[in-house]
Length: 292
Image (cartoon, rainbow, N blue to C red; front, side):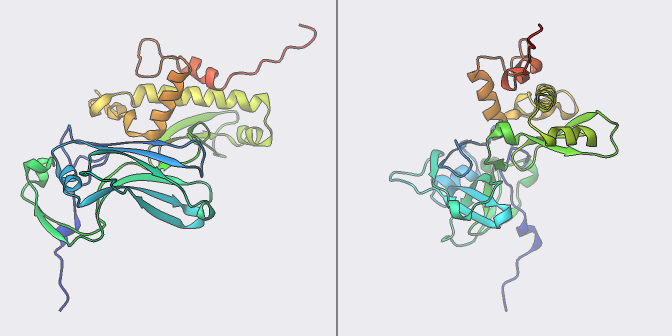
């Protein structure tokens, strides 16, 4: 008879920015560097010491990897890091050459730590030394080949300045109005919803009117980051303020760009100005007539 697996084996703690499976201090940090959508890719991976994920990496049972998916072409591939001599490390830089022929925009990346395919299944009784939350203590889990031990969020391979804002329209909205909300999934972006007349105006041309609307939307997005995503380590005082922008590669890239332009970013509470940053990144075009 085929072997049966108990239901409790189906669950496994995963180290992820939005997960509470591991106690504070145990983390999987990543950074994605890409100059063009289908171009060469560099992914920085780092896992903290003294936990289940770190032990599997140290023992050579797991590897760093990056999942590349292109929904419109149904292409999905996992690129696994190959150790180049020496003992496996908890911090590496993975360089990837993409299969351009199989990719259709948009493309999403997801850094991972996965169990090697050539290992046998293992049953493991979780304890404090694994770094997991106490709710996992004394639970037996089944670890199979290909199991995901750690995961970062999805990141859109497009340049963040064009992909961080998604425009949509709502016919129920009053003429000339707009609202903004965040979507932390699939790499993090802002959903800017406008009334149908504003949407038609934006889509119809590359006019100064369109540029001004998008600049105003970016200012609103930056204000949301300042208000809801600047707390470090999940210790915000209320509601949505306990989210950490460092968990999102797109926001880290935006933060670097703001600092590159010599401006205070949102973690500088005293000097950060959403309006100034927005108009610096998307300047308002001023037309001067000959009569002025």
